[in-house]
Image (cartoon, rainbow, N blue to C red; front, side, top):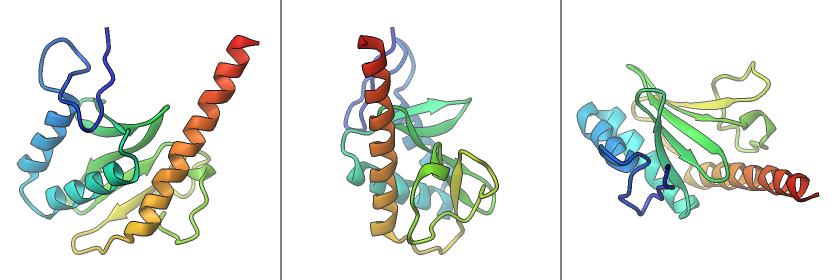
Length: 147
């Protein structure tokens, strides 16, 4: 049986092995360069924006943040840390943070390069918007089930 894992929790999604939060900690440490620092900063902002966020570890090693569905993923590449919003195309982005995966109908991403400055206020607003979108879809599903 799966257990929900909050950012504050150390429980696991499986009955054995490290928790998703511990796996994300390990990824940050193993990177050992600006990418680890950037991923850690982004993770902290996600947790600040949504204290009820659930951290997961999916697809053989991708940090995922969820709240009533996937909010975003944090992938690391040689030259960027990519924060992909699962339903980014449906979100307003008045600060113009999205700079990658702009051609799709569903996802949008932000590529952070070495030395990039993070617009913390705008990023937290995007996270809030993604949580609200997920919550609205979860409520619609619950209403349909009870009808």
